[in-house]
Image 1: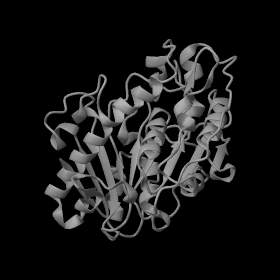
Image 2: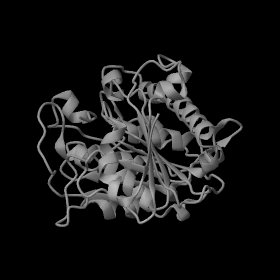
Image 3: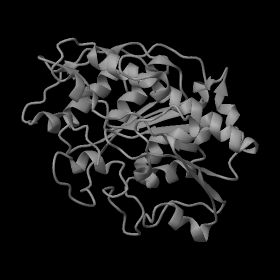
Length: 336
C-alpha cells in the first residue's frame, strides 16, 4: 500500500500532477490500494482503488464510493474526488471488473433481462463474476483492509455485520459505473445516488428502456441526482433513462461546455468530459468548470440521510438511437 499524508504544499504531486488540484487547509490523505492487497484472491482488473479524505473530517462522515466507466481507471477522476472530499465525504474510487461494457455483452441478446443480470453479477457475484471479484466483495475487503491498517480512522463504521453499511454510503458512477450505482441503489437504501452520463440501458429491437430501470427502488427518489452532456450521442437515451428511473427533473443537470481535449477512436469526448481529469473543461482560474455541477449532485456530506426506504416512481418510456451508429458510439460506454 502506498500512503500519502499530505500538506497543502505537497498535494499536487500525490494527485497525479493534476493542474490546480482541489484542496482544503486541512491535511488531505490519499491512499492507493491494489485489489490484491485487500484480497489476495482477486487476480483480475488489478488497477488500484483510490481513497481520499481530509484528516479533520469526522469518522462519522458518510462515505462516497465512485465507480468508473468501461475501461476506466479509478485514478483519472482526481478532480471530482477532491471536490467530494471538499464537501465532507470520505471518498473511494473503486477498481472493479468494468470490461466489456454491459451493452456490448447484451447488444444481441433478445432477453430484456440480460443487462439486469449482467449488472447484478458484477455487483454481487454470479454468472461469470466470482463473489470476490464483484463490486460489493471488493468494497467490503477494501474497507476491512483500511480498518486493519488504520484502525484509528474509523473505517469499521462503514461496515455492518461484516458488509457495507449502505445507509451511510453514497454511490456514484460514470457511464457503466453509473448503471452499477443505479442498480445498487435499487437493491439497497444508500445515502445518495450520483449518476454521470449513465445508465443508458435499453433493449432491442424496439430500443425501449431496460425494464430494470423502472423497478421499485430501495433508495428514496429524492436522493437521486443525474448529470450528462447535452452533445454526447447518449443524451436522448440518458434523458429517457433518467425519466424511467424516476429522477426528479430539477435533480438533473445537462452540461454544455466543450471538452478540454479531443479524443480519437470509439471514445466520445463529450461523454467522458463530464468527469475525466484530462477532458473536463476548466474555468479561467484553472479549476474544473463543472465543480458547481458536481457539488449540486453530491451536496454536502451532512445532507446525506440514512432514512427508511420508500418505493421509487415508475415509468414506461421509449428511446431512439437513430443516427448513432456504429453500435459502440450509440452505447457510448467506453472510457479512456
